[in-house]
Structure formats: structure tokens, C-alpha cells
Length: 187
Image (tube, rainbow, N blue to C red; front, top):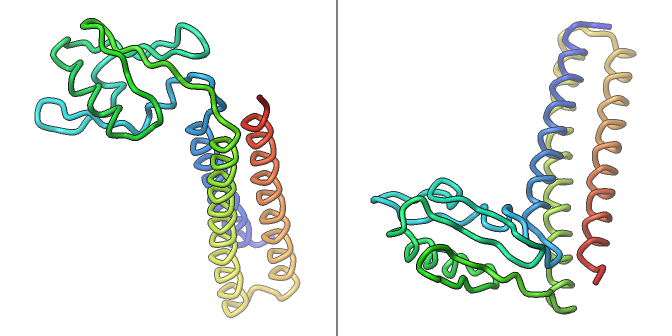
């Protein structure tokens, strides 16, 4: 097979794998009422004149399934961390005891679970659109090959492989979505 054809296949596969990796990280932000350090990933703290991720200003511990403990390295950061968590609108309030911030993760209501599933479905659709975008780029490269003298048969084989990869990666997104939906809807 032509070297350019293999290159397009490899680039397409890598692009689609990147979409899956990103979608996987996105799913980790959604929790089913169980405490995880990932829940605080998007929180930025005003620290010494700049915005820093919360995990760069203190330790995040999970003593049990319903609690997160944030222990800042500098006790003067307790207030700014508490404010950053409240401003992030994550659905919980930290308790400041002067040493650490204790966050009690509330159980999810049925309505909140359904809302979360709706958001996850939107994220899945975004991932599928990204996969189709990678496919479109690959198909454009395939058309360019045809005009550069690569045989029509090789281009057809390439187009088929691109479509098969698209179907496989879209199915992976659907499977990941189904698993996460079930996890969230299970009380």
C-alpha cells in the first residue's frame, strides 16, 4: 500500500483516539454522588496574583465516598480556596475548620441525575462531531491522493478504512456513554 495512504490511516486513528481520550476525561468530571478528586479539576484559586488549579495549592484527599478534604500547603489560602469552590458552582459548600476544608458530597436527586445524563449525552454528541471532523479531514486527504496519481482502488480501500474507523470510534463513544449513564442512574 502507498506510504501516503498509511500515513493518512495513522493520522486518522491518532485523531480519533485523541477524541476518545478527551471524552473519557470529560466523563470523569461527572460523578454519581461518590467523592473523587476529579470533581475539583476545573476549580481555579486566586493565589499570589494568579489563578492556579486547586491541586497546586494543597492536597486533596478522599477519606470516604461522601467526603473530600482539601488541605492547603499555606493556611492563609483556606479562604481563597473556599471561595473558589463556592464560585465554581459544583453543588456543594466547603466547611472551613481553620485547618482544612471538608466537603460533603450530597446524594444526587433523581432530577439532578437526569440533568447530568442530559449533559453527558451532549458531551457524547460533541465527541461524535469531532470524530466526524477527523473523518472529513481524512476524506479530503484521500481526494488529494486521487488527484496525485494514487490508484482509484487504493483510494477506495482507504475510504472504506476511514469509514470503518469512524464507525468503531463512534461505537466506543456510545459504549462509554451507556456505561456512564448506568453509573449515574444507579442509586
